[in-house]
Image (cartoon, rainbow, N blue to C red; front, side):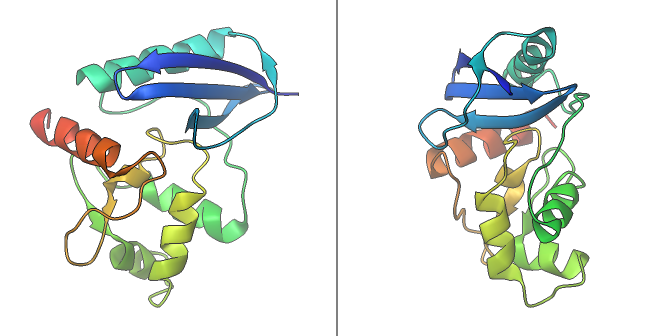
Length: 154
């Protein structure tokens, strides 16, 4: 059974879930539903603190133990997202090329949409081929906010 706790951040209400010794979910409350006991564990508190530091512009990397639950393809995509440096952007096509699936840009978008650990697995750093902001479960305004936050704190 997962432990789950909600926090109010400047970008909205975010839930953090833990199973065993790993964070398994970080999501906006209205975007996804995860079953679990409402318990604020030490690991969940530490994760919330790191997210707050990130949103204040004082943290650029996370050092939280995470467990990615998804298909093998999704996990490959999510791991590749974690290679995108703070303040940098990549297109869906570039991610597809980097995982040796050059025609999978749409599938990359679908994997991003299913990203269970937002912000820590930075799907907000992925943009359309034209450079436009496209797709973000919490809305393009939040995606733009996160990208601008990183650009101003590089």
